[in-house]
Amino acid sequence: MSIQILSDLHLESPKAYDIFEVVPKAPILALLGDIGYVGTHKDDYLTFLNQQLSQFRAFGPWEPRGLPLRLATNPRHPSRLRRGEP
Image (cartoon, rainbow, N blue to C red; front, side, top):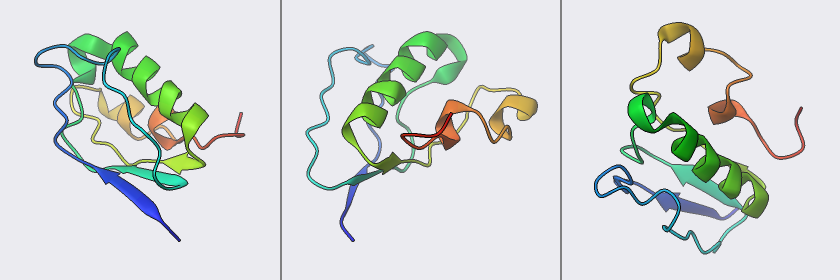
């Protein structure tokens, strides 16, 4: 199994959710931390994650910093989705 690992992207500073391109080099993407800030950039962050869903068989995890506990622990939250799941 091949896994592509990305960490410390800091897409929030400067704001780059829409311009950072992840070129797939493996079927699975692991986003290990400090990817962006969902607290104030929720829509941009989720758009970035959804874009990765279209390129990888699976991706995750990511740290839910800035989310209320009820969202961060929700199994249907986009951070826990895999392509093909509802």
